[in-house]
Length: 106
Length: 114
Image (tube, rainbow over all chains, first blue to last red; front, side):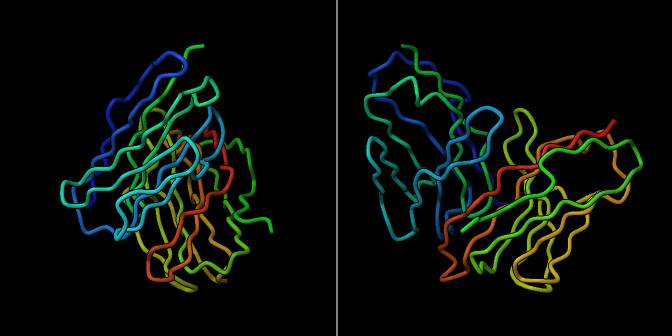
């Protein structure tokens, strides 16, 4: 069974800072990895999807990387804004980590 | 194009009552999933389906049943609700194409069992 871990569980940064969220997984035989954002009391919004053959994907200020051999993915957020405050979840195929709660302080 | 629709969005049950959550998708996706989300636990997979007429157990299937009689619908049933089943339930679907498809989620169904 795939185990997905996200560290840290919570992160607080000042506005404008660049930051990295981490996701690790135990089974490297994945076919994709997806990053989501979840606001309190809301559903999941898909941010980026990386196929197993890809190393990274970019969307605006977000960049996600994938290293299957080491079982790791990172989500890089550039020039963070208060509106980025949310919980970020990674999913390996259909198994989820417990998320990182991000707070960006104005 | 509605995507993934879950009904009902909110429900309160008494212990021992039964209910069914409906998930409908209009994207012609083969794969459908039911998750529950509890504080600090992330999303845990309850049951999933890889096509019409098929179902399979996920990580936490006990106390739940599912059916996929039509490709577009995936039903999650609670035969005898327990307070431990108080949670937010999410449905998701994806296309099977090359097994690389993106997951699409519904808005969630908040269930409280008293």
